Length: 288
View (cartoon, helix red, strand yellow):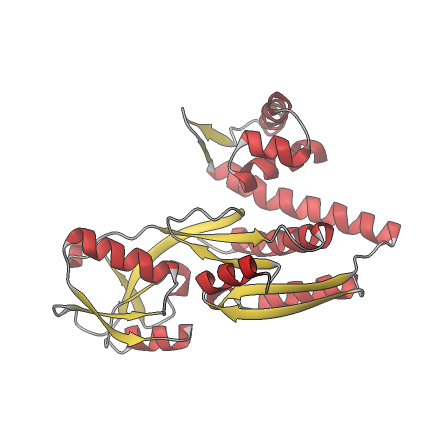
């Protein structure tokens, strides 16, 4: 039987990206966290983290267990909430990047409000950079969105490649300067694409300034412009162009939950846990 204490430490290490920060989050010592990870690896009989001199990587077995661990911890917390009949109170303003505003997230938010009738959640959808700025102004309490190479503090949910999207059926004849479809500033995909092109000495022009994911995909699907987007956003009709087409590799998009230090931290932490557990477990369950 898997030990909840060990699973909680394992998930905290992955979320925080550091044994030290995981220890701080759980109010434990770093040696205690390391001991928990060794005991958990002994229980499952497989390595869960591949340690390097400066950091660590989650092994495939670790990724698999992490999904189950989040589900187990969520069920444990839900059971305790139901048995104790304690609910949270307050209003939460959630800023969501457009490419994260899908039905699963909204179902998760509705479920949280159903379980906690005293909580009202308002959602604001926009560009990640705008959402982070709004949080710093005090306009939103929690932000769900991606970053590419920046280091805003928060909980890492998952990573995925950022790719150059192009029409599947269109011939690959990229003109110079390179026509791009981009979101307005501040956008992590825009900044990553422009930086990589500049470093590669490739001239570009903004052929289409998009205000939605739908317009960004339309630009790429038609062959009107090349669009940087996360790999998961490649809908039918789109393909990813690579270095074989003379394009520089783009960095990974890191999807994060960022929490304002203001507001009711207990409510924000509970909602963040619910979002992380439902979204990440769903992604683990998706076929590779």
